[in-house]
Image (cartoon, rainbow, N blue to C red; front, side, top):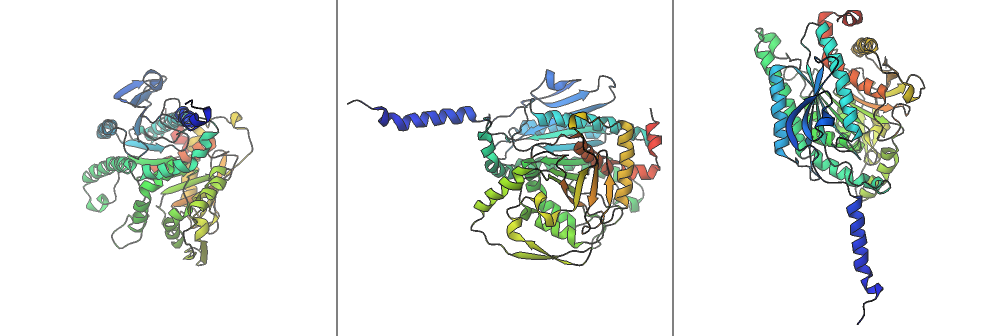
Length: 474
């Protein structure tokens, strides 16, 4: 009996579908399999698989930074504990010899830890600029420059390679992002904060005055940045801890003082998670009407008004997945103006945090219209003068206040208390064009200024430095 093409059709379809899926899927692998240190002016070129890369400025060997990679699989587990152990061992060694400026970055949708990834290149550019500024500012205030260390947390944000098909992976990668956030990322972030805390303890032990010892910190700083689903990864890992530390403030037990965060600063760019997950933090921050002068930013959430992936696609997916959930209107008190606000819980459950208007505290606008390609890099003079302005304006922050940055301005809403440490920022589409666009120099510069403010505000005030004094340091 002959077999017709029609009887063979199901098997043929399975073969073709399997071939399609095989060729369309991005590899599920670790990219940084070599755990030995690679030091060079361009380590990404000579040792692209290295998980530990030290970049040395060929023009000024004193300026150098370390990039470390830790990777996770689709189940949220570490690809290799040996990789993480090598990174942590190196960071602890560096912490023995130096104070550190630790910048951790978690990439988002359509990215990974491969050497060719645009986010890897962007991250190294940020570290290079920070190392240059750190060298200048620390020497000016009479301190040894901190070692700039970047920790890049890689996961399979890009699961499909075909251009059109990969657009359909949005909701699948959202689920994986939360899985990664509840998995090995928590351990890695906790180990990084332990490095900072250990340095703080060592410095405190060296202080003879017990009154000064309690809140004394080292110069080591930790900043965590997440983009897109990387923002979901970070928030999943840290949200409950942040809620606890908002209540358990920095001062003596029973006294409400400065809200504590994780490390020194958390920044989320176009984060892809629903506003309902952020409700507790937003409610607590809004309920408190005043913040003390020493309060620094704890978290900054930046969302572009042109991020259509989270503005339109995200609510559609959430609406379908929440059809059988029950919601109601929630009331909360605004501590600044003593008004009662009504929060639509149903809308918060399908809208991303950055697009949910009741939670927005700031607007970041471009100060002038310009083609991005024509933007000149900020000079060292501009960076330093902007830093002093940022510190001064934050110290005197109030509802409606505007802080000018290089090419952008940050305006606080009239209903958000001054120095509210939880910033939810709506970003001008001229600054961030779409969901994956995060490399505008003005946006990177804005984030860099927040990092520098949290790192240098106290020592600049103590030394009573001026911008010109910093610029005169050779």
